[in-house]
Length: 217
Ligand code: ATP
Ligand code: MG
Image (cartoon, rainbow, N blue to C red; front, side, top):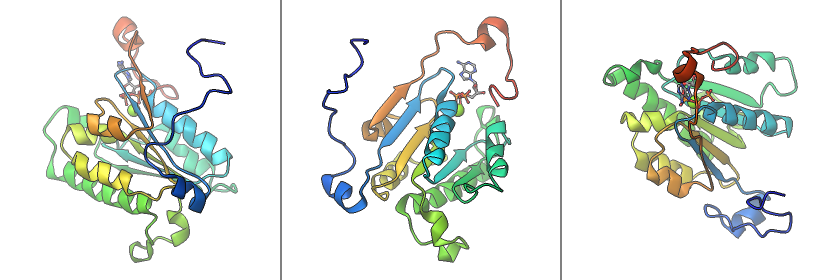
Protein backbone atom coordinates (compact mmCIF):
# COMPACT_ATOMS: atom_id res chain seq x y z
CA UNK A 1 0.00 0.00 0.00
CA UNK A 2 1.14 3.51 -0.72
CA UNK A 3 2.44 5.06 2.50
CA UNK A 4 0.41 8.19 1.77
CA UNK A 5 -2.87 6.29 1.78
CA UNK A 6 -4.72 5.70 5.03
CA UNK A 7 -4.97 2.05 6.03
CA UNK A 8 -8.37 0.54 6.73
CA UNK A 9 -7.74 0.99 10.45
CA UNK A 10 -6.73 4.66 10.19
CA UNK A 11 -8.93 6.91 12.31
CA UNK A 12 -10.25 9.66 10.10
CA UNK A 13 -10.54 13.20 11.46
CA UNK A 14 -13.91 14.29 12.79
CA UNK A 15 -16.33 16.20 10.57
CA UNK A 16 -15.79 19.94 10.53
CA UNK A 17 -19.15 21.12 9.24
CA UNK A 18 -21.67 18.91 10.97
CA UNK A 19 -22.15 17.73 14.51
CA UNK A 20 -22.79 14.33 16.08
CA UNK A 21 -26.36 15.50 16.72
CA UNK A 22 -26.86 15.80 12.99
CA UNK A 23 -25.75 12.22 12.61
CA UNK A 24 -28.25 11.07 15.21
CA UNK A 25 -31.27 12.87 13.80
CA UNK A 26 -30.66 12.35 10.09
CA UNK A 27 -28.74 9.14 10.10
CA UNK A 28 -26.31 10.75 7.71
CA UNK A 29 -24.05 13.79 7.50
CA UNK A 30 -23.29 15.65 4.31
CA UNK A 31 -19.82 17.06 3.74
CA UNK A 32 -18.45 19.82 1.55
CA UNK A 33 -16.18 19.03 -1.40
CA UNK A 34 -14.17 21.68 -3.27
CA UNK A 35 -12.62 20.73 -6.63
CA UNK A 36 -10.47 23.61 -7.75
CA UNK A 37 -7.18 24.33 -9.55
CA UNK A 38 -6.13 25.00 -13.13
CA UNK A 39 -5.99 21.40 -14.40
CA UNK A 40 -8.68 19.43 -16.21
CA UNK A 41 -11.11 17.23 -14.31
CA UNK A 42 -13.13 19.32 -11.86
CA UNK A 43 -16.53 19.20 -13.57
CA UNK A 44 -15.84 15.66 -14.76
CA UNK A 45 -15.20 14.58 -11.17
CA UNK A 46 -18.39 16.23 -9.98
CA UNK A 47 -20.47 14.43 -12.64
CA UNK A 48 -18.71 11.17 -11.81
CA UNK A 49 -19.82 11.64 -8.22
CA UNK A 50 -23.33 12.48 -9.42
CA UNK A 51 -23.55 9.14 -11.25
CA UNK A 52 -22.23 7.28 -8.22
CA UNK A 53 -24.77 9.01 -5.96
CA UNK A 54 -27.68 8.43 -8.36
CA UNK A 55 -26.94 4.75 -8.65
CA UNK A 56 -26.85 4.55 -4.86
CA UNK A 57 -30.43 5.89 -4.81
CA UNK A 58 -29.57 9.48 -3.93
CA UNK A 59 -31.14 12.59 -5.43
CA UNK A 60 -28.84 15.01 -7.18
CA UNK A 61 -29.22 18.68 -8.08
CA UNK A 62 -26.63 20.32 -10.33
CA UNK A 63 -26.60 24.12 -10.59
CA UNK A 64 -24.22 25.35 -13.27
CA UNK A 65 -23.10 28.94 -12.96
CA UNK A 66 -21.89 31.04 -15.94
CA UNK A 67 -22.50 28.11 -18.32
CA UNK A 68 -25.31 28.12 -20.88
CA UNK A 69 -24.14 25.53 -23.39
CA UNK A 70 -25.82 22.15 -23.37
CA UNK A 71 -22.76 20.07 -22.57
CA UNK A 72 -23.20 16.39 -23.39
CA UNK A 73 -23.28 15.41 -19.71
CA UNK A 74 -26.47 17.44 -19.24
CA UNK A 75 -28.28 15.06 -21.62
CA UNK A 76 -28.31 12.44 -18.88
CA UNK A 77 -31.53 14.04 -17.62
CA UNK A 78 -33.34 13.18 -20.86
CA UNK A 79 -31.72 9.76 -20.95
CA UNK A 80 -33.09 8.99 -17.49
CA UNK A 81 -36.55 10.39 -18.25
CA UNK A 82 -38.16 6.99 -18.67
CA UNK A 83 -36.14 5.32 -15.93
CA UNK A 84 -36.87 4.94 -12.21
CA UNK A 85 -34.33 7.73 -11.67
CA UNK A 86 -36.23 10.42 -13.58
CA UNK A 87 -37.15 12.39 -10.44
CA UNK A 88 -33.71 11.96 -8.96
CA UNK A 89 -31.64 14.30 -11.11
CA UNK A 90 -32.10 17.93 -12.04
CA UNK A 91 -29.60 20.10 -13.90
CA UNK A 92 -30.10 23.85 -14.26
CA UNK A 93 -27.92 26.53 -15.81
CA UNK A 94 -27.68 30.05 -14.45
CA UNK A 95 -25.51 31.84 -16.98
CA UNK A 96 -24.98 33.26 -20.43
CA UNK A 97 -21.86 31.33 -21.34
CA UNK A 98 -18.15 31.78 -21.01
CA UNK A 99 -18.26 35.20 -22.73
CA UNK A 100 -17.81 36.51 -19.24
CA UNK A 101 -14.09 35.90 -19.73
CA UNK A 102 -14.12 38.47 -22.51
CA UNK A 103 -16.08 41.39 -21.07
CA UNK A 104 -17.31 42.84 -17.81
CA UNK A 105 -20.35 41.04 -16.43
CA UNK A 106 -23.64 42.46 -17.66
CA UNK A 107 -26.62 43.14 -15.36
CA UNK A 108 -28.18 40.02 -16.85
CA UNK A 109 -25.12 37.90 -15.96
CA UNK A 110 -25.49 39.11 -12.37
CA UNK A 111 -29.27 38.63 -12.31
CA UNK A 112 -28.99 35.05 -13.58
CA UNK A 113 -26.35 34.10 -11.04
CA UNK A 114 -28.18 35.74 -8.14
CA UNK A 115 -31.56 34.21 -9.05
CA UNK A 116 -29.89 30.84 -9.61
CA UNK A 117 -28.15 30.96 -6.29
CA UNK A 118 -31.40 31.89 -4.51
CA UNK A 119 -32.83 28.68 -5.87
CA UNK A 120 -29.76 26.74 -4.71
CA UNK A 121 -30.14 28.33 -1.27
CA UNK A 122 -33.70 26.99 -0.99
CA UNK A 123 -32.57 23.58 -2.15
CA UNK A 124 -29.69 23.58 0.34
CA UNK A 125 -32.12 24.48 3.13
CA UNK A 126 -34.66 21.88 1.88
CA UNK A 127 -37.27 24.63 2.05
CA UNK A 128 -40.77 23.86 0.95
CA UNK A 129 -41.00 25.02 -2.66
CA UNK A 130 -44.80 25.21 -2.81
CA UNK A 131 -44.62 28.92 -3.53
CA UNK A 132 -42.21 28.31 -6.35
CA UNK A 133 -44.24 25.74 -8.29
CA UNK A 134 -42.05 22.89 -7.20
CA UNK A 135 -43.12 19.93 -5.17
CA UNK A 136 -41.70 19.29 -1.74
CA UNK A 137 -40.52 15.98 -3.09
CA UNK A 138 -38.27 17.71 -5.56
CA UNK A 139 -36.54 19.64 -2.80
CA UNK A 140 -35.05 16.68 -1.04
CA UNK A 141 -31.74 16.43 -2.81
CA UNK A 142 -28.93 14.53 -1.16
CA UNK A 143 -26.12 15.86 -3.33
CA UNK A 144 -25.96 19.47 -4.55
CA UNK A 145 -23.29 20.34 -7.11
CA UNK A 146 -22.49 24.04 -7.62
CA UNK A 147 -20.53 23.81 -10.86
CA UNK A 148 -18.27 26.80 -11.68
CA UNK A 149 -19.65 28.80 -8.77
CA UNK A 150 -16.08 29.95 -8.10
CA UNK A 151 -16.13 31.71 -11.49
CA UNK A 152 -19.34 33.52 -10.48
CA UNK A 153 -17.50 34.61 -7.33
CA UNK A 154 -14.37 35.66 -9.18
CA UNK A 155 -16.40 37.92 -11.48
CA UNK A 156 -18.40 39.30 -8.54
CA UNK A 157 -21.72 37.92 -9.73
CA UNK A 158 -22.21 36.56 -6.21
CA UNK A 159 -20.65 37.43 -2.91
CA UNK A 160 -18.72 34.86 -0.97
CA UNK A 161 -20.44 35.54 2.38
CA UNK A 162 -23.83 34.64 0.87
CA UNK A 163 -22.48 31.43 -0.62
CA UNK A 164 -20.64 30.39 2.54
CA UNK A 165 -23.71 31.24 4.66
CA UNK A 166 -26.03 29.10 2.53
CA UNK A 167 -23.63 26.16 2.64
CA UNK A 168 -23.13 26.47 6.40
CA UNK A 169 -26.90 26.74 7.01
CA UNK A 170 -27.83 23.89 4.67
CA UNK A 171 -29.77 20.86 5.75
CA UNK A 172 -27.05 18.83 7.47
CA UNK A 173 -27.65 15.70 5.39
CA UNK A 174 -26.80 17.41 2.09
CA UNK A 175 -23.43 16.71 0.48
CA UNK A 176 -22.18 19.76 -1.44
CA UNK A 177 -19.70 19.86 -4.30
CA UNK A 178 -18.16 23.14 -5.43
CA UNK A 179 -16.19 23.18 -8.65
CA UNK A 180 -14.13 25.74 -10.50
CA UNK A 181 -10.82 27.52 -10.69
CA UNK A 182 -9.78 30.15 -8.16
CA UNK A 183 -11.72 28.82 -5.16
CA UNK A 184 -11.52 31.60 -2.57
CA UNK A 185 -10.02 30.86 0.84
CA UNK A 186 -13.47 31.14 2.46
CA UNK A 187 -14.69 28.11 0.46
CA UNK A 188 -11.49 26.18 1.09
CA UNK A 189 -11.97 26.88 4.80
CA UNK A 190 -15.45 25.32 4.90
CA UNK A 191 -14.45 22.38 2.69
CA UNK A 192 -14.11 18.91 4.19
CA UNK A 193 -12.56 17.50 1.01
CA UNK A 194 -10.52 20.02 -0.96
CA UNK A 195 -8.81 18.81 -4.11
CA UNK A 196 -6.63 20.86 -6.40
CA UNK A 197 -6.49 19.71 -10.02
CA UNK A 198 -3.04 20.87 -10.94
CA UNK A 199 -2.15 21.26 -14.61
CA UNK A 200 1.03 19.36 -15.35
CA UNK A 201 0.37 19.12 -19.09
CA UNK A 202 -2.64 20.05 -21.19
CA UNK A 203 -2.91 19.07 -24.86
CA UNK A 204 -4.52 22.41 -25.65
CA UNK A 205 -1.21 24.07 -24.87
CA UNK A 206 1.21 21.38 -26.08
CA UNK A 207 -0.67 20.15 -29.16
CA UNK A 208 -3.36 22.75 -29.81
CA UNK A 209 -6.12 20.18 -29.16
CA UNK A 210 -9.44 22.04 -28.90
CA UNK A 211 -12.47 21.04 -26.85
CA UNK A 212 -13.97 17.81 -28.17
CA UNK A 213 -17.48 16.36 -27.85
CA UNK A 214 -17.64 13.75 -25.15
CA UNK A 215 -14.24 14.69 -23.71
CA UNK A 216 -14.40 18.38 -22.81
CA UNK A 217 -18.04 19.08 -23.54
P1 ATP B 1 -13.63 19.28 -17.30
O1 ATP B 1 -14.98 19.91 -17.58
O2 ATP B 1 -13.02 18.72 -18.52
O3 ATP B 1 -13.66 18.36 -16.12
P2 ATP B 1 -12.64 21.39 -15.62
O4 ATP B 1 -14.00 21.49 -15.05
O5 ATP B 1 -11.56 20.94 -14.70
O6 ATP B 1 -12.65 20.48 -16.90
P3 ATP B 1 -12.66 24.24 -16.20
O7 ATP B 1 -11.74 25.05 -15.35
O8 ATP B 1 -14.11 24.25 -15.91
O9 ATP B 1 -12.13 22.74 -16.24
O10 ATP B 1 -12.33 24.63 -17.69
C1 ATP B 1 -13.27 24.83 -18.72
C2 ATP B 1 -12.82 24.18 -19.98
O11 ATP B 1 -11.41 24.26 -20.17
C3 ATP B 1 -13.14 22.70 -20.06
O12 ATP B 1 -13.50 22.41 -21.40
C4 ATP B 1 -11.86 22.03 -19.71
O13 ATP B 1 -11.75 20.73 -20.26
C5 ATP B 1 -10.84 22.95 -20.31
N1 ATP B 1 -9.60 22.92 -19.52
C6 ATP B 1 -9.44 22.41 -18.29
N2 ATP B 1 -8.17 22.56 -17.87
C7 ATP B 1 -7.52 23.21 -18.86
C8 ATP B 1 -6.17 23.66 -19.04
N3 ATP B 1 -5.27 23.47 -18.10
N4 ATP B 1 -5.85 24.30 -20.21
C9 ATP B 1 -6.79 24.50 -21.15
N5 ATP B 1 -8.08 24.09 -21.05
C10 ATP B 1 -8.45 23.44 -19.93
MG1 MG C 1 -15.41 22.91 -14.97
